[in-house]
Each structure stands twice: as structure tokens, then as C-alpha cells.
Image (cartoon, rainbow, N blue to C red; front, side, top):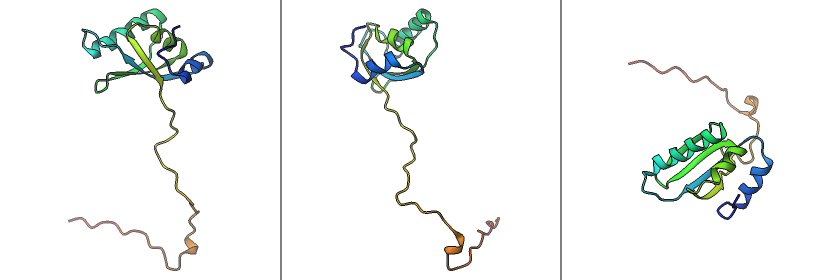
Length: 122
């Protein structure tokens, strides 16, 4: 496989990972509509490998986002339409953890805690 268009982190993970790998693949411009070109490349790889990936094409920047086993991704990146590829950054959660969080104890409050009364209907 020609690795000139791959980032180093994706080249190493394709050889070591058995689970699904998520990548962004930039496709070369063609006379076909970009969405049709991306679908054609994916369909061709499904026929060759027998693996059905999860994918999404972003028309704003014309990038194909694919999540599939490493064998599918390797074959996809060999296609002449793929000019660049990078691994999707891993994020654990979109929630930012609080700083200096403390457990809450109702007895530490110097006033009584009342439940919130139900809202009045009009």
C-alpha cells in the first residue's frame, strides 16, 4: 500500500487494530458529483471485501467519514480517488468535567431545603 497520502497514526493503527477504525478520507475531484463519487467508491469496496461500513459524506469540505474494520479501510485507501486520509480524533465525552468538584451534603447547608413547588396551571 502506498502510504504517502496517509498520516503516520493511521498507517500504524491499520496494522494493529481488529476493531472498527474511523477515518476521514479526502477524495480527488472528478467530473462526477462528489456525493456520487463517494458512494461509488464505498459500493466498490463493499463488493470487493464483503464488509459494510458506516459512512457519511460531508459535502461542505468533500470529506468521506468511514467507520469500518481495518481490512476495509486498507482496501479503501488503495483506491485512486482517495488522495489523503487521517484518523478521526478519539473523544471520550463532550462533557467537560468540573474542576474541584465536592460531594454535596444537605446537612452542610445552614437552612432547610424545601422541594420545588409544582408550577401553577393557568
